[in-house]
Length: 211
Image 1: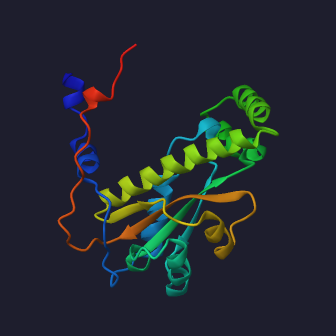
Image 2: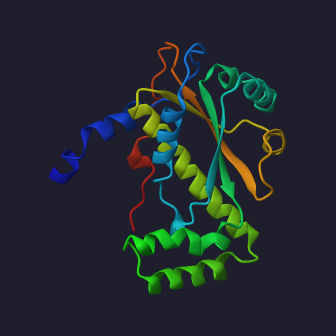
């Protein structure tokens, strides 16, 4: 228990205080450097076999936000936020597994033999199995979205995940590649004062079973 109490208190407080913003200050913007750093941190999220089967479309222009607004059923945070990140999953990512693993081999994180084993296994699991490809892409993109929101919180920014959108319309309006699909949208920016706090959660004791 002593180890648990000595965990990084900053990380703990970020998790405990983060709440989805209801409204953003539309007068404030984010720079390229700020957004790229947040997305760099998002790409440090776990990814099975290092597939990194995610990608990001950043919507921040007036035109882009106007196009996105009706596809999000009129949610005003889309146009208020400094940027809205379309966090995407990528089908067929397994076919780039060798490319993904080569930097790991060069860095000494994997031996070439282990990388070859991973490549073989990934192709066996994913080739011709689009359900598996999609499930894995959703998992990876979802973890990246959560990391993005925690990184934003640590940087003093607000965020809000959005699942209420037309995925077909978003894919079309923002010219997503055929094998790329939107998983979740993350609005980023500076929250307007609202008194919004993290909602109470069900006691963990009611949710846990031991085996």
